[in-house]
Image (cartoon, one colour):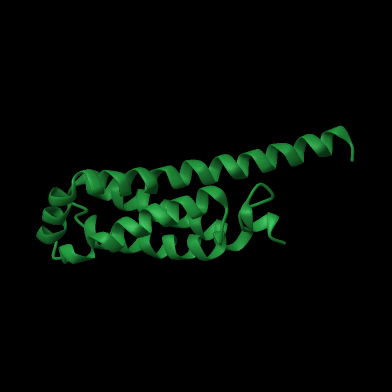
Length: 134
């Protein structure tokens, strides 16, 4: 393998790992913050008509999904589910486009869903548990 090819492969592998970690950090930190502000999160969910009893599922989705993406375990499945979760949260929590912040949050969630769809199609890459299990 030429040094240029080797360098390109290393760059791709590192970028894939870094991208997964950056993408997953949002979900892991969000899940942890919901644990820390459990009652306030239930209140926010309730105001928007979402049953507070779903909060444990939300926390588990964010924490477990985020960790799965970061380590590259069952990446295609986790990414597909988190893409749906991101679109669903955009539609439920950020649909007031008269509020510019809500519109930006909506677009952020839709963009994140796009990144997850790319992971769904392309997988985690070489630096992942998925790759080690082949």
